[in-house]
Image (cartoon, rainbow, N blue to C red):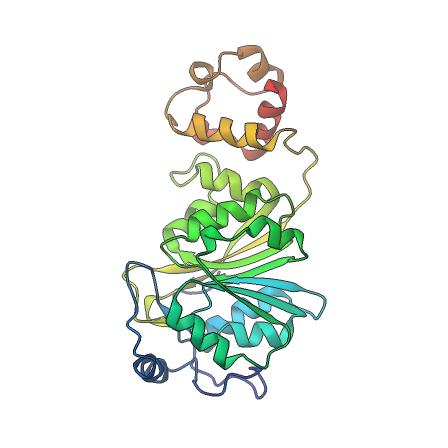
Length: 290
């Protein structure tokens, strides 16, 4: 985990972008000028904050470990600062942009990128599971603050889950994704994120790494798919059990689940509270109850 700063303002290497010469992503002044040219005013409500730091960009790209065999999903590409390098390194990129102005900018800027597909839509209205089933194996994105958690959970629940995800989210969301049992941040999001992934805080990101600077800190979370010895037999029932129990996280398992024999059978304690139950135990419990 790196320090909570943007890092040195080094220029990107030659050829670092496929076809994005019009704006220097490491300079907020250039981003502001482009936004003025587009007559675009970022919305704080929608979490429209644009990355302006080359070091953070490099960190995300390096963590993605991209090759021409990869198909990547980007959600909320904005001005295309991340989109260009993704298209250069991966075999295929699918980018989902909701905003009309930004979508048109992307469509024009990357009109000659044969391996980039742009989708003009709200990510919550897109069949993300279908995209993943169609060969997407990695997700690299600065997730919009407004819908980032919901989109992330949908990706975690998709039948064809990506093998690797590198996402920038609010720091508090990142802390919940990687939280361990017994900590204050451990909850439903922690369990869902860690059911199929090894999740780690890859880099803390300062507010000044974006323009306009958000009011909250951010962080890059790296999620690498892992194979568990035991998987949920009925994923919807498993998720429902976890959500129901965490709605009353301070209650004991014995008061939340009537089948005490099932709790004891997997080696858990009916006096345990949901916030102390490891992910593996949730899976075992759900399978036993099923």
